[in-house]
Amino acid sequence: MSKRLVAAVVVALVAMVLAGILAYQPAAQTQTNMSPRLGSPPSRAPGSDLAHSLLRAVIERGNEVSFKATQTIILWYPTGSSACITNVVHKAPNLTRTDYLPSATATSGYRVVISDGESTWHYEPSLGVVFHMPGTAPDKSRGGSRGGPGADSPGTVSAAGGDGLALIEANYDISLVSTESLAGRKAHVIKLKPKNPGNPSRRIWVDTELPFILRTEKYGPDGFISSLSFYNYIEFTSQIDDDVFRLQVPPGVAIVTIPGTEDLMTLEELQKKAGFAVPVPEFVPAGYVLEGGTLTRRGDAEVAHIRFTDGLNTISFFVEPPAPRAGRRPGVPGFSDDVGTMNVGRQVALDGSKGLLADYQDATLVRWEASGYEFTLIGEVDESLLLDMAKSVNAPQPRTPARDSFGGSVIKFFYEFFWAGR
Image (cartoon, rainbow, N blue to C red; front, side, top):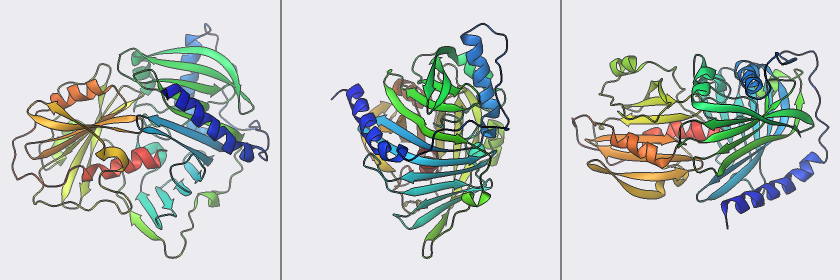
């Protein structure tokens, strides 16, 4: 079955599930007496200039829009596809609740993710566990707008720190495609096409009245669709009670605290703070710049996480030094060390070592071991670019024996990237 045919089948299944939901949903309402509105667009030439203006408004003011909605997310990857339907409530600027609903097309049952402005709570009823991440509001944990760089959040576009739009404009051709109706509203369709080969592209549907994205389509470097997110029903309103964003933990449910994400630091600061040498790939794909890094402690060890961005997409590089003693470090309860399909892949030859190349949902992962260090690269770029990055890493000389485990320290990243972000 072709990828496009699979996509059509999945969309049809989701539509059937949504039919019952939408049958009793009220019609979408227009937001009144609320800021910000886009207002009349400036006097610009049609097409590209308007698309740039709309994109800037979404990046700068998208978080200021409060709403209640039903959202659908569909992911395609080499081993199949998955879909979920969610109820989303967002109160500007930083309160968000997402209820993941069970359905025939969902890969998991009901769960809840809440950001209360100070931390993130993730309740998994099937596991009897609440994961608590202090100090991680969605607009901070990944940088930029709600959801962070590269995250699929149909309400906003996330950009790198500083003037993220300038970096996006340098690396993507931004054009206005058409105007369409969606969820009872009018939307401008904007295409973001990468100027550098090997990168994903996007189409976004921006509301004509508010700086808000109603639909996002992401296409992989091969041109096939990799993810789709859209609102079936949406109501823009500021009349939302704060109690909605307080998680009531049922009796007997365990609370597991996961360390929050630190603010990004410069590479120089990271090198000074780390108790080990942190190598950086000598090759970086065209258009990508070093955004910064963080240092995370796991038990008696630290892991460096370095992030590269082209303004819209992110490549993450993890460096884990040799362990002081052999043995597997404890992972996060409820998750295996290899996280889903991370253990499915193929061996690849790197300079002087062998690595594992694997697909996980709409991203590609490369991990390898050299001089006792463990390295992991993950991104949505073409696999050849990740392999070139991996080959350009010069591992420091070993100081202690290599450990038996491999990949356990990146578990927190995968929790954030593939669970909390979706």
